[in-house]
Image (cartoon, rainbow, N blue to C red; front, side):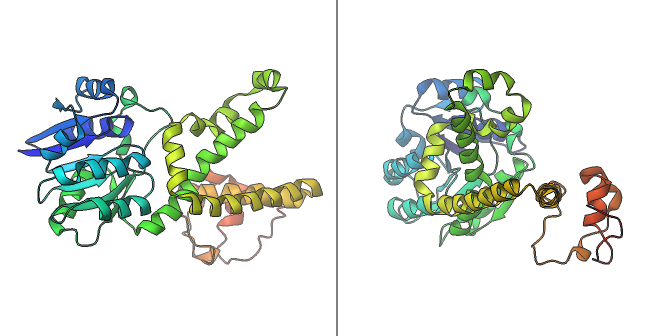
Length: 329
């Protein structure tokens, strides 16, 4: 029987346990523990765990594969606590949102003979805790995989097997590259959401303003409802990358401010059409480097018209790369 341990049975840990138990993987026994005892009890009640342990060391001693599903800063303490309890050949992995610091901690605290693979499922939602767990949360999502130097092929294969059973796509990436990329597409968005809530909520008129806040404000600020501890830890362990992208974002806001102040209709059109195009390309899986000529974009006018509208589709998907004869002004 393969024994899996889960330390941290919040949203991700509980979702992971349920998904593994419902998969085709056989002869699996899952033991879990959480700093909040009610979380691990709820995880077992929901079918994520076979057993609830009293301590992290107890989980570690019996595990062939150990998942650490805690906030990032807690991973350091977990690794330091369980390092001497792990048996030779054990695979340890995590689900934290940053990787450079985690990989460094693994080097510091894990003994020889124990494999470590940094992991990050690009899945989640703003609600947290085991009550909000969903086994399907990983389906169709990238799962970042960062093996520590010297990790055995068997350990990598074992994790890949689980990832594929979750319905995720393994994505091998360097730790530094991971932290830079997720700062842009994961960390910056929740910071922007928090800043929007605080900017508007700090207004003396917020009581009246809030009565008009509807779906647009709700959707734009959704991530501000996420776990504050998780967000704090991400900022503490990925500050340089986040500050880099925040700097780029502030520059873009200043650029947008200048365009609005100019009252230039054409520049405003270009601003919002460019954003619409870029998001549409991302949603359709057609994202490409800015250096790629537009004529090399696959010719799918009917799909593009559905995604962007005919006017922008014609502008985007031109067969010869030249200006359309149609007046886009």
